[in-house]
Image 1: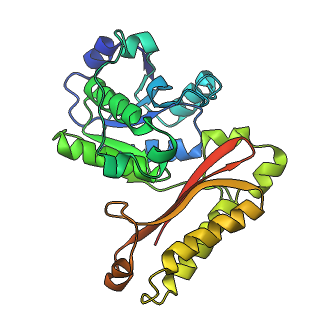
Image 2: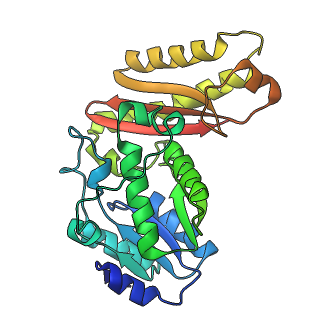
Image 3: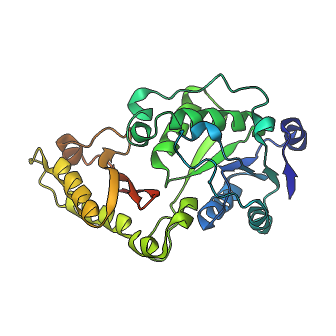
Length: 283
């Protein structure tokens, strides 16, 4: 595996490779990331991964400085997966000048849910992803469905900018107890780790309740959301949101959604202690 930090060197190595598949990450790799590498191999060759902790998507009080960085362990894992190139730029490599040009997603998609509680997050994500696409110039790029809203925003960005990149979704990988794998799971204490799977169990309960709903009850969906929040609060969580949305555009689900059989998704973000976890479940 070649480890490259310089943009021009990366382009030199990839010159003539018009089927490259790309998996951008922030490192601290786990089985969820590695499953994306395997999926990428099914859709293109060679496989290029990146590791870059992107300052632009962290708020002033978030965990940029403490975000887990495990470069050597990550290299070992990527080599075992047969990744061809690891693009691991420094901030100076990727942002040799202050990144004054930004990509701002539309408010109706970028300022809801995660965007409401992490202002500027998706602007930072879109900006770095567009720049990484420019560096790698892949045929396909793979993103995990655990970051459901992010996947949708990047897919729409690629479409609106007519980028020659196919966005491939990768299923969420979970621990045996149902907790979605995440680099931030390492922040959890032993007691918090034992409680953490309750987030997914709560989503499963909401899904079962949605499937049994009488669509004529105009307040039913919001009542389910509120009840799920109350349940988590009672167990010591601090939920930012539990939201039942349409898969197509993340607009709030409605009676019409239920009546028409519109595919739905339940999304959540909640703090357990000092650790903020996100998850989702499609209906």
